[in-house]
Amino acid sequence: MPGAEAFLKSDIADMALILKGIRSRYMYAYGPVPSRRLGNSIGVSPIPAKVCSYSCVYCQLGRTRQLQAKRQYFFPKEDIFQDIKKVVESSPADVITFAGDGEPTLCSDLGWLIRTAKQEFGLPVAVITNGSLLFHEDVQKDLQAADIILPTLDAGDRETFHRINRPHGSITYAMMINGLSDFRKGFSGQIWLEVMLVKNLNDSNRQLFSIRDAVHAIEPDKIFIMTPIRPPAEDWVECPEPERVRVAEEMLSEAITVLDREEGDFGVSEFADAAEAILEISARHPLRLEQARAIERKFGEAGTIEQLLQDQKITINRYRQSDYIRPEKAKNIPKSASDLSTNISVDQIKCCAYRVTLDSSDQKKRYRVILADGYYNSLARGSLSKEELLETCFRYFLNNALLERLESKFSLRDFGEQFPQFETDIRNAIAADKR
Ligand code: SF4
Image (cartoon, rainbow, N blue to C red; front, side, top):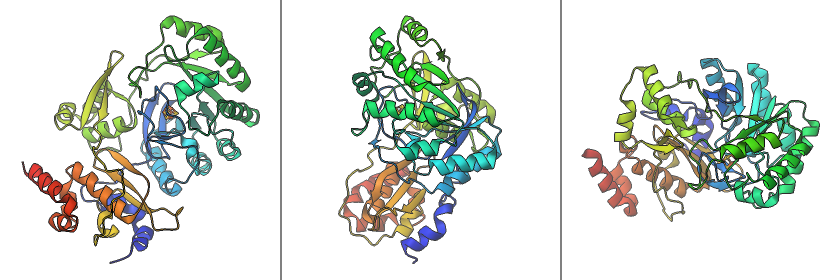
């Protein structure tokens, strides 16, 4: 049996193809999606879900799971680039947008990705960032190659900054503002500043005056005043009264208000069917019910949404007079390390995961894994020991009733014998699977 390193060298790129029942899919790039500001945009997420330097109260992706301010190499940059290439080749688009399900400037490869994408595809490149890391010289350097930077500025003072953006402890308001204005001085592209207004958090006259002063220091080319039109991380987040938005427009005299929701179709050419398209898109981007219905129509597969609801793969949440589809997430993935000693190899478990990589940042043998259950991608955070890797993969697949895939690689009953703590779970899962 080849060792883990042999596997990692030879097979990482084709991991998805190894998996029985899972075909190759685009993991980092998606779309094009209709963007309110950018037109038809190919989205690129070069970082794991919800790794961010902020945990904004209004975040449409929920609370931040990994609050961090240190940049790092998350995924092989060539893989990200190949995904972008596939999506670019599949549908026409106006722009490539690095956004991420978190903060994209945390990705140490961002500069290379922007430069390479521009060079290869000839499309403009935009980066949607919270702007918190622009005080780092290397982040500024990376963003120089982009055409449009869309940073966030929701506060004109320290207190409001902490209440609304909830930044990583090492990021101060002064660092964020200085980074943005410093970047402006050396950047020849467009800066489109986004100000998210939240009722009673940053919409008072005093706060709007402070935001205006901060805006002057940054000198953006455009300002977008946004309001939380999608389900927020915190239930109590509310849209400001129209009157407050009007006042904000007046104060930020050059502001361009964007209150309308995005219209238009999502690119679905890379998906096998309506179910896959709805699950994948809604995992990455808020999807309104009527947009999901349009996807059903494109595939001629009416009733897909009802089936997904019945299978408990999605939920529908109402927010501001609209229904939004969200994928159901995997439950009960263990967070703690286990003290397993095992004969099951990484080679065996690799066949059940989407991708396993050796974490080169660590001298000891540790792994990173991306798990996929066929409709919802998830990342086990941080680097894992072999035992944690095995347990995480196993738990994940067990919890998602993907026993068939596990069974095709090794006997679950043998697995149960090796891991007595899983015996009951395995028995229950097999029984449930047969019902
Ligand atoms: S809104 Fe953006 S910056 Fe704020 S927590 Fe979400 S991903 Fe991070």
